[in-house]
Amino acid sequence: MIQSSLSIIKPETKLHVGIIMDGNGRWAVSRGLPRIAGHRAGADAVRRTVEACPSLGIGTLTLYAFSSDNWRRPQTEVNALMRLLRIFMRKELERSLRNGVRISVIGRRDRLSSPVLNAIETAEKTTINGQTLHLRIAIDYSSRYAILRAAERLRSQEYINRSITEEDFSRLIADSDRTNAPEVDLVIRTSGEQRLSDFLLWENAYAEFFFTKRMWPDFDANELALAVNDFLSRDRRFGALAQAVAG
Image (cartoon, rainbow, N blue to C red; front, side, top):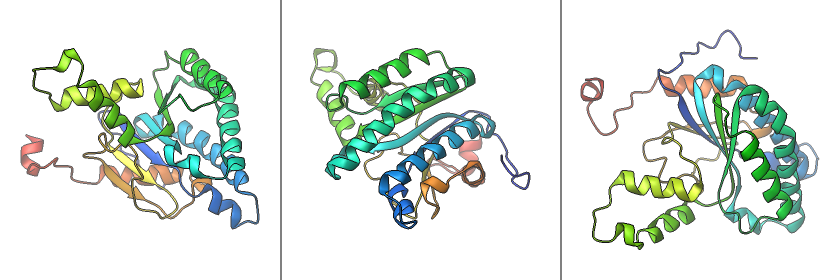
């Protein structure tokens, strides 16, 4: 429940918010719990955040769930994370359908197990008509890899002997991620860290940033509202003067 003391001003167009969900393991360790307990608590924070998005004017939410670098973690933790992702996908189907949430997954799929892939594909097919919120979950995701894949496609006959625009390249990246989403408006990172960690580098070209020391399992609708209010108070000029953007 969003506290009434927070003044929410909805933007005229729906926002694209990306969240780097950081701090699950540290949250658990600080409580004497195994790291996977923090990831389970993080799944609850995802549900709270998704539910809060429509009332805050958020139309697209991209969550950084598992980076390509996360394969370096201990195998037991990786296996537990993949199992948790699979369970989350299956459990969220009914809730997503009821609330008009479309689920998409971006990132590599060639290194995911068949059970995880089946859960992803089922969630995507079942929720494809959701219009209230587009929930994009980044799994085995690397922005550098997505950019490289897009660059490789420039070798194809379609692009030979022609000038490439930013719009062309954005479309190629969107194709490599299997979804078409607007550029990111706001990036939120939890746990006090202040870096992008290979997250949507191309799409974040003009994104605003909001860093909070709160660990991801403690993130809630109020914290999301604070981030959105802070974003809406900023003067976004995109390299131009304020009057030029307004006019």
